[in-house]
Image (cartoon, rainbow, N blue to C red; front, side, top):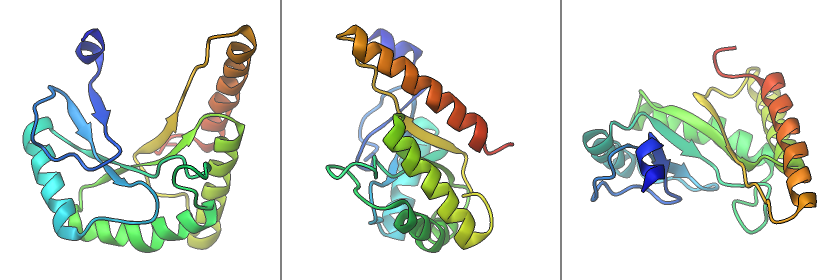
Length: 169
C-alpha cells in the first residue's frame, strides 16, 4: 500500500484493459517480443488508459536477451522497431512516446541493448527514437556476493546510460 502512494506509474506485461482504477498512470506494454496488436486495439488501449490514468507512454520489449522471455536478437528487434513499430504507431497513436528496451541491467542485458542501438544506427542512420530506456533492475541481497555483484552491475548500468544518454542528449 505504501508503494502505491509513492509510485506515479506502473506497467503490466499485457495490455491494460482500463477496467480498474489504480490511481496513477499505466504504461501499457505495446510489444513483448515481435508481435503487435492491431491499430484498432492500440487505439482502444490508448483511449481507455488516457481516460482512466492519463497515459502518455508505451513500453516496448521484455528481456529480449533471455531465451525464456522475448528471445530475439538486437539486430532483429532494431529492424522490427524501425520498420514495423514506428510506422504502425505513427498511424495508431501519433503522440506515442516509446520507452524501449526492457533488458535486465546486468552485463548480458547491457550488451544486448548496446547491440540494439548499434544495429538501429547502422540501419537507419540515427539513434532509435524514444522517450527513454526501459531496464529491469533486480537486486539480489540474500548474500554479500550477490549484493556486491548487484552494486558492480549497477555501476556498469550507470556508465551505459552516460554513454548512450537520454533522448534529450
